Image (cartoon, rainbow, N blue to C red; front, top):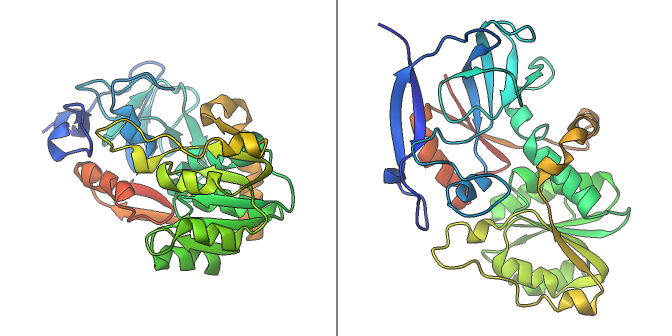
Length: 335
């Protein structure tokens, strides 16, 4: 019986929260690689908040996933067959291969990784897009300086855990905002944050006054909404607000809520800037090398949330991001 490739495809554009009927579970024949290409079996799939935005048919930094297309996702695959000069069976390769069990690629946008140095999941997390996002967002967009006060929202997520630890490695005071006592204890107890604010149980504005009495120099925003407003109200002079994401707004069926405290930017002579990590692609190697060095020195600890399952578990696993159930980088590991 011919081998089949299980895939998750977009069946309909979601309104608000993504529903099971928005996905199509499909089996198709496994392709042979053909000249100049390699075939691989998916080992680990990345799950990211940005995926929700890719499902909407509106202008963005990437085209939306088309109806009927395999869901876009980063993944690490193990090469099973190859007619490509740069890849051979047994190699592990990271790329945007989509939510499917088997892939065929000509190698464009792909990169070999060494699983003897780090597990495949880490190349989707600390040494992948989340790590690059934290690094360039904080150091380039945020123009971080030693000794500053940094506040990170979504601090227990894939980007937030790395951003906060990079700030600590640079000698800064770091306050994380996360949901629940377990996450907050992890930030201060394991990752070395100076303080953590539980937005579910605390008054964020009051807590920011307590933990950033002289104001916030860099606010790294992953959530938007009310927490962004609270941070804007506590900016120090010449502060930088880094807009990385707005997970609190992604499932809104109504227009995204903008900041009401934006005039703090004027009063504090501050700036707020969004960014897309792909703009720094030529410098990924530099960033990965420095992050790997910090990991080796124990200054950055890798936090990963690995769900073991099949491709068919992707839709439910994705929802963990929006329910705040993951700690660190969320990945789906296939058998």
